Amino acid sequence: MNTYFKKICSTAIFIVAVTSLPAQKNSKPNIILIVVDDLGFSDIGAYGSEIHTPNIDKLATGGLRLREFYNNSICAPTRASLLTGQYPHKAGIGYFDINLGLPSYQGYLNKQSLTLGEVLKQNGYSTLLSGKWHVGNDSSAWPNQRGFEKFFGVIGGGANYFDEEPMPLGRPYPVVLLENNQRFHPAGKSYYFTDEITNHAVKFLDEQNKENKPFFLYLAYTAPHWPLQALPEDIAKYKGKYDLGWDELKKQRLKRQIESGITDKNQTIAEKDANVPDWENLSYDEKQLWKAKMEVYAAMVDRADQGIGKILEKLEELKKDDNTLIIFYQTMERRLKM
Image (cartoon, rainbow, N blue to C red; front, side, top):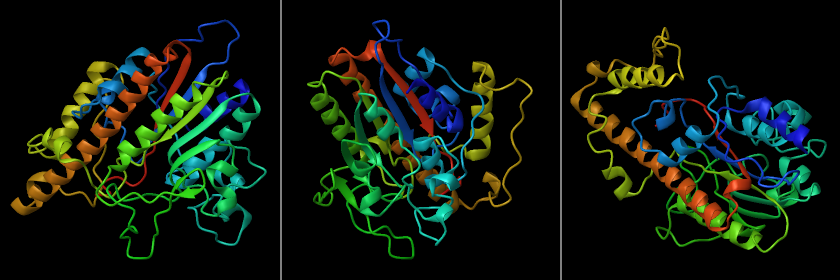
């Protein structure tokens, strides 16, 4: 198990945050793999951000922060590699979760590629998943069929945060919410999806505490993946924070990265994408729109961090915080998907 897990980490890890080592010699550690979706390199406090992420920062301070990372550019192939330790084409997901008629592009994990859930389950772990799957729409490739004993979340690439209505992508994109293979139909506007992911993870940990074995929790938030939807109280925290615009914001983040040692002192700001205009060249209305979008984006990240804090509190309550390995991973895809 340990060799396999190290292989997974070396394949696609961005940030690793580790709590204490196992309390007892030769005891198996609990494992929590946290994934946030479409989060940029500098969008958390530990990497220079102005966004309030104290719980993620706590993990970074007490663990390891990586200065280099690799992924597969887009979401589903990255998750396929993360879950199997293989190149995405070998696992069957060379593109998205769409069947293009070739084994390398079948759009779901093949049977030859074992998942972390399957391997750890065979090695005596309880296997739990709350959040996003996105490596197979067919029911034969759902989490409960691929090694996870308990699952709550969305099968596809995303969901609205306040309801289960189809995603407005210009084409039909149904949202499939499940709890252990059963369709989950919450009333619209009765929940916030990031909180639902957190709450189910906490519930799974409480239930698992009755079992005399270690656990593996895959906590896969959709936040801050599009659509930009956040809670009013979280948005309010960031009112006015982005009035300075993205050009000045980049300078401030780079300065903090250099001061923290994450970035070399000779590092300069990367050349701007041709599609991103200078902030000062935007009209007044454009600035108001983009400031609002950045505020909502920050609020979404903030809420995910709050959820991670609840998971850490639950570990302490269950007295498992001294024997749990926590890995925090950020997927990066096409930036400015706002």
